[in-house]
Length: 356
Image (cartoon, rainbow, N blue to C red):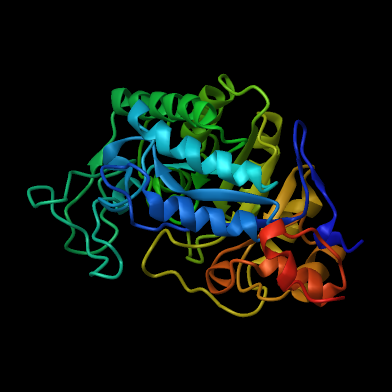
């Protein structure tokens, strides 16, 4: 059996292979409510036999959405459609996960196919953003309001309440979004966190918000696996670094995080990213080699053979795919054929299976 198609054992669950759908925003919700688009979108990956599906960034509060069309889980009203989605995913043998998120200063934007621009608070579909410090992402944008302690506590409670709803909706993996320049990441980095209280300054202070979110969410979990997505580097001088990420991984593992989903960048406009094949894999590898936590890797992984080589080299424990699964939702079936592995297909699709 190839490593890519061997099970990934979690504490209370097992994925039947190591191919995982990476969270990808669809900008297709209505007041945070999932639609048939989401059911079909996530359902196609489950039919395609991925091991798990991590649902797109799902906002824990209305102002935490990146755009007005993002999914939300701040209300019990959101649960009904999400239950339908998780039930279908499970019926196909995949494990449903959800990424709980707050966009912080990168919120209140338009859909990317319209403009990606931030929408002003006094304009239709716009609202006032919040952040660790009053620093805008783009020059000329409306400044976010620096969060006071009461606001910090409110958002921590929102993560906890959203986790409760996620469990009721049937998700078995809860991932916290601490990457790509969104709120948790904004607390991490000295480039966006200029606070002088207990949430700013030292490394310990800058990760405090995350630790308090983890503790709040962990308190309501039963058998669900807790994951954390991070940007392992800001790709910018004076920002969050790989060394910081390794240090953080050790701490959150002790707090109950089972897997680190390793990406990079997204915090500042002046980042200098060197995009090439496997460009993010070394960051996952470094964290895996220097900690005891499970590690997933991402970034320009396009073939089953490429994914297999990463796992065989011990650079990661699983592969999260984004754009490649948009191009081919049945990537897992193609990769199995490519690697000479015979996997079960949905009965309805079996007649399309090539003989290996």
